[in-house]
Amino acid sequence: MITGKEDLLQALIEAFLMEKGTNLFYSQAASKSENPEARKTFQALTVWEERHMDYIQHLYMAIQGDLDVEGFEVFQAKAEAPVAEGGIPVKDLEAKVEAYKFSGDSAAFDIALGIEAQAYNLYRRLSEGAADVNARAVFREMMEQEQKHIDYLKKTRGQVA
Image 1: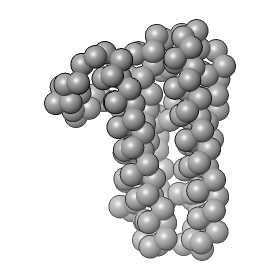
Image 2: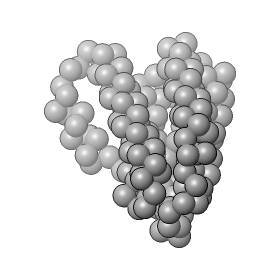
Image 3: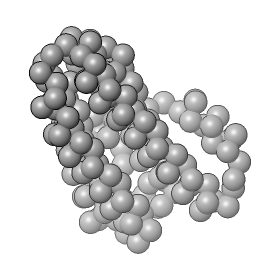
Image 4: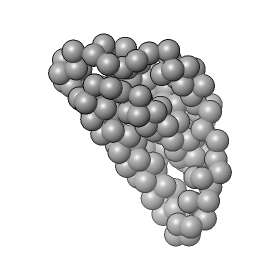
């Protein structure tokens, strides 16, 4: 679990794995959603999480001076992502997805808003406490991205009834 005491490279790896875990949740939620608007929302969030992963990958590789994309893709494929953003265990999220049918209720949105709020708070704490100035900047950027997700979910939630 990411603490804020990591150096920039380790912080990027931890953030990448959390984004991957969240991506897995949104992908599963999209596939289980019977409501077209809910499915569309979770598919969009899946894409956003993929972009976050790409952003973090790019930063990591640029800092390392290693542009071996294939090597990073092998890491991505093999790396376990046991937690989603905010430190929520992915297995807990998967159990929640199995427990709900996302057809006309807002259960999936409640789960997603919880994930994004916890992620926002985590990145905020990390940005405030990071010893590495570059890690602090990355955490602030990630915090701002999580706020965009929260705003998007709040906006689209009312369209899924």
